[in-house]
Length: 237
Image (cartoon, rainbow, N blue to C red; front, side, top):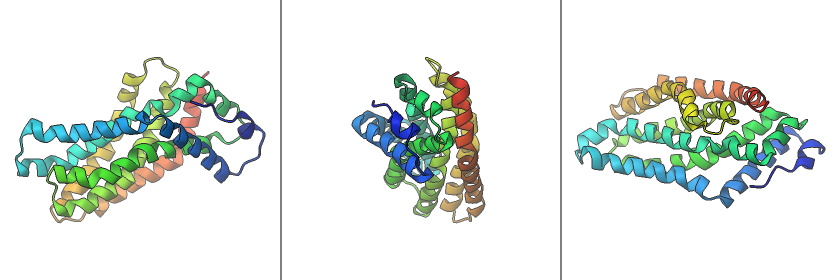
C-alpha cells in the first residue's frame, strides 16, 4: 500500500474539493490493486443470503416475510467486515501520521476516505440488492423501499462505523471491540430500514421511516468526520 504523497498534502495549497478527490481517488486505486478488499465483503454477503434458504427451508411465505431483515443484517455485517481496514493500513504504513500532521483539513480527508469505503462496499450492495431480493422471494412492492433504504442507509453504516474504527485503530486486535462499539449504534437504522420495507410490502406508506433514516444520514454526515478526526488524534497519541 503506497503512503499518501506527503509533499502534496503538506505544501501544495489545495481546495477542499481537490483534497477530497485526491484522497478518495488514492483509496480507490489502492483498493482496486488489492481486489480482496472489494470482493471479500461482497462474497460474504452473497454467501449469507444464499445460506438462509438452505437453512430454514424453501417455503416462499416464510422467506418473503423475513427477507427485509435478512438482507439488511447481511449488508450490516458485510460493511462491518470491511470497516477495520478503513484506517488500519494507513496506520501501519505511516500515512495516517502524515494526515494528522498535515495542515490540510483532516475532516475533509476523513470524509473522502469514508466516501471511498462506501463506494467499495455500500454501492456494490446496492447494485446486487434486487438479485438478493429475488433469491428470497421478496414482494415486488418492496423493491423500491429496499433500494431507497439501502441508498440512504449504507452511507450511515460507513459514517458511524468510521468512528469505531478511529477509536480502535491503534489496537492490535480491535475487531471484537469495534463490533461491540458499533453494532448498538446500527440498531436504530436496522429497525427503521426493515420497517420501511415491510410496510412497502404490505402496501402501506413508509415515508416516516425514510424521514428518520434521512435524518440519521444528515446527522452522520455532519458530525462523523469531526468525531473521527478527534478519535484519530486520541487513538494515535
